[in-house]
Amino acid sequence: WNLETNEVFFSKQWKAMLGYEENEIGNNLEERNKRIHPNDKEKFYFEINKHLEGKTEYYQAEYRLVTKNGAYKWCLDRGKIFEHNKNGKPTRMIGTHTDISSIKESEEKFSTVFNISNNLMAINLIDDNKLIDVNNKFLETLGFTKDEVIGKTTIELGIWLDPNERKKAIEILESTGKLNNYEVKIKTKNGELKFGLFSAQFMMIKNKKILFSEMRDV
Image (cartoon, rainbow, N blue to C red; front, side, top):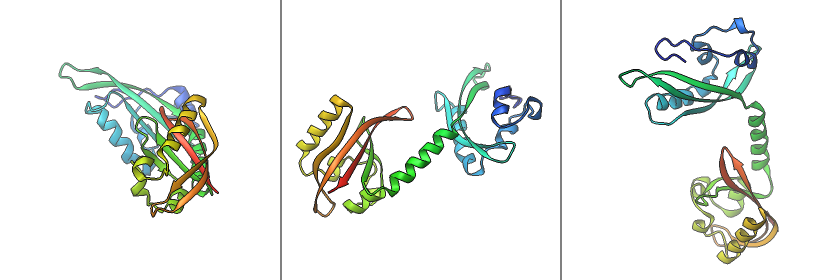
């Protein structure tokens, strides 16, 4: 991408990804921008401008592009400025587009299962153990709102009746990589005791190591 002229080289493969022949798309940036889903444009411009302003080492965004037949494909767009003029102003940028539609479809299916499950489900980051998502059953059973839970650890929420029980579960997890039907006792927000069968495993999501856990209320 020539930032001074807004001319862009779109590869043959990029055009084919959207269902076009090589001669059907020109070399202007607008060819890409006009195909971005309206609901994704704000996020796209926010991320690209952060990089152009020198606030990020590289640019990355996920958004939908409309294809020749009118359907949308999810795209992972990554890029980096590689040339500046003598005044330090960026002049050229290079990037890649990857079709991630199948990944997004899997995520949507997971999200549906996650939220309609009759088991309590939670996802937390390994680095700080803070919860980044919980399902509806988790909130309904334990009596919390989502705002009360996200960004907190289960220890901070006082869910575990016996912290040593949690410690033992984590030790098994770290040595085997997963945990299946581990008997636990947890507390709801109002102090009610619940017995459950706890399962968990480590996973990678968007280059971050997370712990996915599930508990069946027995």
